[in-house]
Length: 463
Image: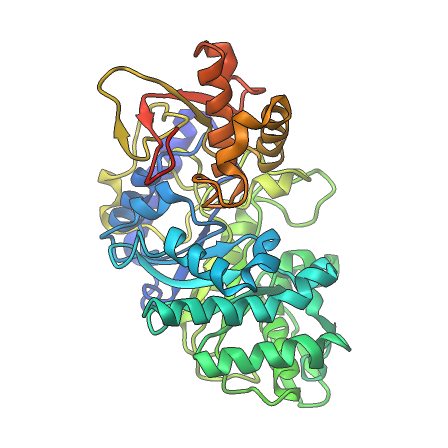
């Protein structure tokens, strides 16, 4: 969403003046945010980490990968960090030697300085309908936990996986909630057994935004409404989120696992959308997320789960300008890339005015990951937030030119781990750049590459 600097500054001042009365008591400690990076205009991770610590009440962050630069940025901040294993890694993670190497490469270098508390194996795996991924989900979680035990990290770092509401075959009324037939016994029951045995939470991504209609908009937004009665329990629901959470609880109860905590891994509301979309504006987003914060931290719980708070991660920290799909997908952020609030929900501290830039300056597209080279050498690396599909095309192009470019990122190669598209693209793009004379145009890659003076090499992996 574009705003002129004067409007941004005015909204910032308004937010600061309003903060003293709107910071929500008790929210700190249970409130997190999803830190997505599908954008090319985000600030460096170190600046983001400092902003969250100094200027907001957010003290939990969920990442969608194990980005080295971000994990380093959160070192010594105390912020609780959840990292993610991409879906495509699940089949390999079922093998103990791979799980051990994954922990060694993606977790052990950063702890305890970075407060990693949880590893998520994939995201909404069951909803992908990919039989190979679904069959490997629980074995991968079990094997990863075994690897953590071997590294003496299992008490500190838990393993879970987030689900969409698509895992439910029935959700209305909430008391009738149940998992899809087949998945319930063969996947979700062993998954819940694993979570119980390891004291890990069941994680769900509820989005009233995607479930509402013109008739239920107020119900979805926590606005005054007539409420919905569950005829089975005679319990009254005043908001859609409670209904969604209780439907999940009912499904879990059918399998006998009511003692497992439920964590809201992802929920939010966009501030901008396409003209025909319902309730998509900054006021609605502020209303949803503001009331969400108050509700999940109030201790009131839900009709079927009274007197409890819910660890909750709002989607998302920033508007992400490279996300595909309709306009709303790029406008779920609480903050603009310059860290000014899109709207105010009381998430900033009273001291935030000293931390928010009044005249933001452009940020570098690639932030330094490690150390500079004194001889002035340059490297070609992916831009921050470069689209994963574009980076995969870069890998395919460079590796198609000859095996010598990409041998180190093949299986068992010195640069194979971390086995992510971004890491492999960084090596391949740089190999091409170095081999062709280090010309600026050899690092363009359809505007996904940027030249850096910082050596990205690590361990035996030399760029």
